[in-house]
Length: 400
Image (cartoon, rainbow, N blue to C red; front, top):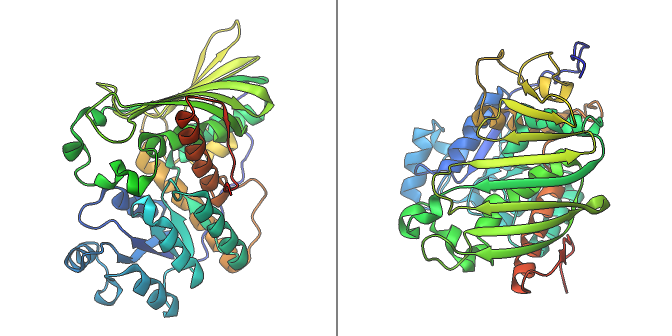
């Protein structure tokens, strides 16, 4: 493979610092802090307001700890949407980090007052809600990003570009696994901060599939460029007793009749965040692991294997190079990926608000259509498992 030495198109400079508001994230909630850290790390956002909790005392305490002005600490996200939209210095976008069964109402409220939306995944619980958001976004013309953060690792972008440029030949199979161990712990301990994740009344018919399975599904489609068309799913509960699955195994058919597998489990002892993908073509196989994000393994047919390391030149292509912030040997990890993701969101929002035209293909952030496909994946998995593992198509259209 030739070294990349030609200039690449850098991200445009910001027209101004954007203002971000948070819904959720108070009282030490993990995902809210991650969103805020990624936004700040991007260098393009100030986090200035929030309805960090539905409990007023927690909202107040957390808001002060986050450094918000007293009049920008909100006890209710509905009030926040109205008041921020009315301010001359109101937020440019809101980050939604509450449990996913609340995503629809919150997103709808902010879209209705003209504020761009950044939403955690999975998008919502039903395709009806997903399509209602799509209709509202089309009506308002606002930005809607979804935070599949693993897609913003530099070497994931490298893999995606290599596949598109034919460096592994024609794709013949795709395999993804995502293993964790937390479901081995009794739910009251493992999920003490987010018990809703195991509540069928709040997450529907899937737990682990919705939580980490959606990451596996998105990564497969994002890198390969092939939509998942149908799947067979088997759900299992292999850890501590609970009402929903902690493990799911999938047979997959991607576009072009490309076969694949997905294995996701939160009951694999000794694992932590074991997200790994292999895409195999007629000329080579690419392999990437989230726990070793700096490396991308290229295994050509009947030739020595290569390991590409994040950095400039030495085979690194333009889509990855835009996400290189440190020289090789100075590691970048998931926090950097969140920063990359929020940088792309900021560029897209800045361009929408100023009317600037961006070069085609400059951004590859997950958007609302990607979030809708995630909901379709969860629904198909639930339906397939309920039907004894039958082949089930992914449909983004709600059933009547």
